[in-house]
Length: 406
Image 1 (tube, rainbow, N blue to C red):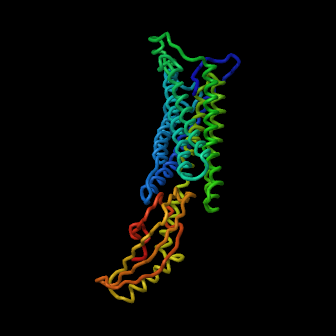
Image 2: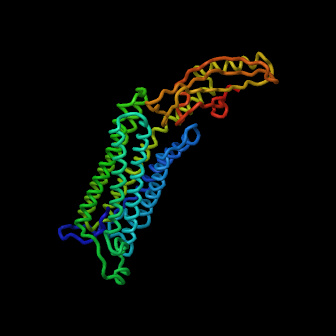
Image 3: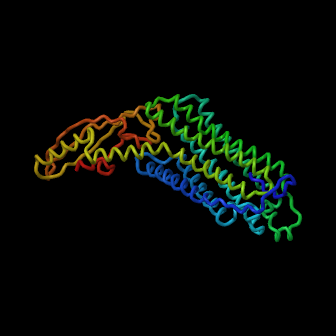
């Protein structure tokens, strides 16, 4: 919650000849936005192109990305159009009320985008431990989700009652509006300052335990060391969000103390908000990268004949050459004795997945009369991309595994 009081402090002195500008925010914001957009769409690509299905956490992170993108766009607009890169005395007075409206819009978008991101991360953790862990841990996740939602709604509602009428929140700096509406009410600036500090502090707290709960989970589930270290690294990056939240809270406090040069100090809040919002989304999408790049490198490995797959290719070529005509048709049949749940390439601990290829059937000749039963390949990572499999059947050509075989 950003206070917009412009009453000057007698003890504060300003260099009114300082007309410096900070014009680097657009490049900073666009760089972060491009990276985050790639990660979000890569996550959705993984969800929709594997045998799994998108979860509710995917919907939430997509909505968070939309709001975060809008916030970034408005932050850039605030610099180009409304003077948040300048000192307040460099901004025309008739633009002040528009700056107040812009600050309110950015704060609202930030509040809801970060809320959805935190809930998405917690929902991911809940889905990862479905059917495992203690009831207390599950309740801790649900309690964390409830607290994030409650604190977001509470502070958003407070912005609606801060001024009566509501538009006075920014229109109080519009001389034309003041001439027509001389009587209005706004909450005391001291109370607004305290509420702003509380909102910033609670945002940092929710950032922290949204990272901490999944990190604690990693030590409780049975996954490979490589997966465990990878997840610890990803959730460790989440503490960058905590750091950005702390910086934003500090800038909020300074902006409340400095009641005149709002535009110059609010710029810092926007910078920290862009970092906190977008880095949070990036960390939420990072686990999907293991699946995406793992799938890519497996496809490259098969296509160019590396490792064990090159043996299959060479055998297949040999069969084709020796029999003269006709093609080779490969069919993978995979049967799971138990249902499985794989989330972003991370095996959920309650089930065991053995991706077993029982046979490779090579049908030889134009009339497909001959059958060669060859090679059984155990590969626990074979279907790491998918969310859930039950008696799955995979066409190697459609999945990319057929490249170089046919």
